[in-house]
Image 1 (cartoon, rainbow over the protein chains, first blue to last red):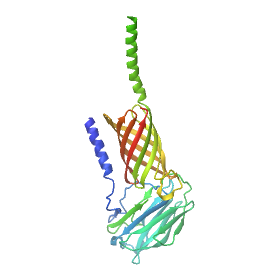
Image 2 (cartoon, rainbow over the protein chains, first blue to last red):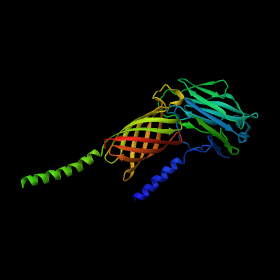
Image 3 (cartoon, rainbow over the protein chains, first blue to last red):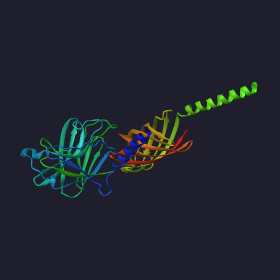
Length: 188
Length: 150
């Protein structure tokens, strides 16, 4: 009985070590499968007033929606829900869309249930770009590479609590027209 | 004769008493100092814990990358909170236990990190431990020195 328990404990220990990403590949690949909005089940919370990361889009980020109007929909890249709020109430994320042969990056926030977005800039394919969302008392400050900051309003009034992370999501109304790959590297 | 009986009685009492004291001593305190390699870099930490006679523990801890401060910004990530220890298995001087740490990072962000710890009793009041856990979706590995009253 003890032998079996020891074996299970060792197995669990090894599986924990197995969670460490490969040293040679600091980026984590996210797949938005064809016909789906996304499949990420990562449970993680923010641990700082700044969310830093790098991301690389490849040619799979080029897409055409079935309804041309939906081409203007903003897909989500990464961000977080604000203090103890669900993300459709208070949250801040970078969004993206393929429009006019450019990959646009947007600031995308919910403030007390109301949605706001604003263009931050465009990024090239197959090259890493740096993203940063900083929380201040009443605003979110979005920064992309060396471009000017975009300041968006913040609605949450609490400070201490859970800020759960939000991961890549396609849509909008439509699902991904083909497999889309995005590589993301968190920075601490 | 009476002296011999008294001596035998006292000896029996001492043996039984010492047996009881071991059981009573099985609950007590632990002071832990540790280093942990996390996604945010190497962190140093301290923990005080109360352990029941069955090995369950409840404690408080602090850990941070540099000197403990909320003002150090991006690189420090001080983590303060409470921990629960649950015994899994004991094999001689080796004990396996699970631990769940919950608390605030940067005095603001609520997180929870699970760990699996292997403890080795080096001498009566000193234990060494290594643990593997998950923090920010990445492995967090730590080495611990435990001073115990048990």
